[in-house]
Image 1 (cartoon, one colour):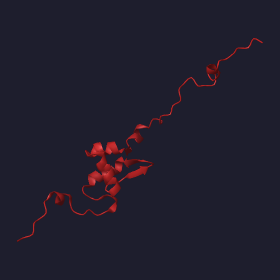
Image 2 (cartoon, one colour):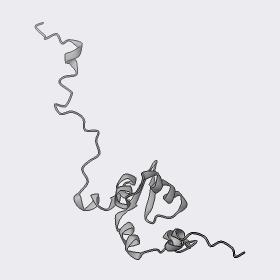
Image 3 (tube, helix red, strand yellow):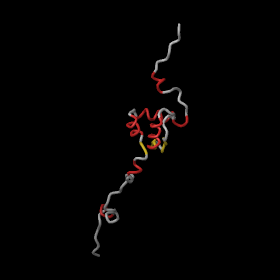
Image 4 (spheres, one colour):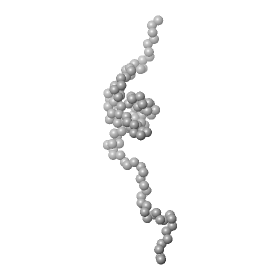
Length: 111
């Protein structure tokens, strides 16, 4: 019996792949990569803090947002269209006041 004796560390060597297992997500095609925005990307686009994005999403002020598990993604085309529309509210909610009214101090009653 001239068989080869294998050590425990060598036994699995013949069945293992030479390449390491790839656990990362597959690459996204360039056309689809631009289709959605993360919270961080949207915050950078709007130049606001990411907490502002989470709060606005929770209040329904941002269109095109979808919760996927614990993450939120925004449809880039919907966001860009919303920005181009001006001051129309998202999701059909009516705005309490025009944006310029928020910058004007309240009037004091006459004495």
